[in-house]
Length: 289
Image 1: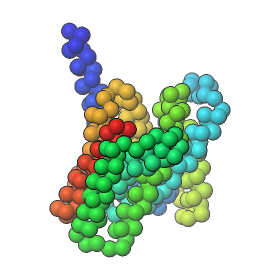
Image 2 (image 1 turned 30 degrees about the horizontal axis):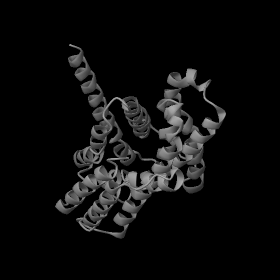
Image 3 (image 1 turned 60 degrees about the vertical axis):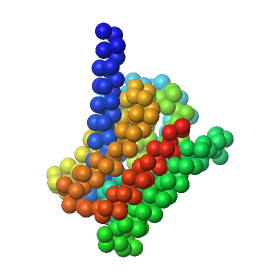
């Protein structure tokens, strides 16, 4: 009886992980739907999530050390840069490519961990890296109507993975002392200020003028930021790390399905093949990480 209950509990968390990935995959969709410029869209994603998160973190906020708050705010700046490059990339490349290339985070985290924490490269990381490079070549040479703008979008999406990797590295040690929701909440201040200042410099003051302009921003804050990030954080440690890694790799695939039905974005057979090779490479690279 206990075993059955345990299996039911595990299945529940697997379901939550899949649900979280489905929520996270909507991020690119809402950015595409937003009529505001990309940096402003990122700013409102963070801004609207802060009051929604506050009721869940207000008690813990009193117990967090000041030095950890400063580090989380720094992490928020990296997260803002991640959103800036990612949101802009959607103006030049497909939702599928932007999601896939932003998932190359292991190739940021692992090399940086080598220099910061003296962690050695594993054979699986080197092998996965080689496979991923092959996949990238296949993907980027397989575009149906290739333009320089397409490649610009792909490069911006890859830069996204670098800043998200820096965000994860910054909060990795703090995660043992501070809950995931509090990290998302506090990092919102560093990220929000960075996005606001960048918006002023690059796009000027931007704000939604109607409900039709508001709902993609609320969707980003509620569905992508809180439901997606929050639910995925909730399942950390509940699902086997290898299984979780496989499920997370489904995000670009789900995003591809969303973009096909909503925007009629079609990928070539070679691009699908390249995506498959990259996903295999990422999985192998992060297998022992």
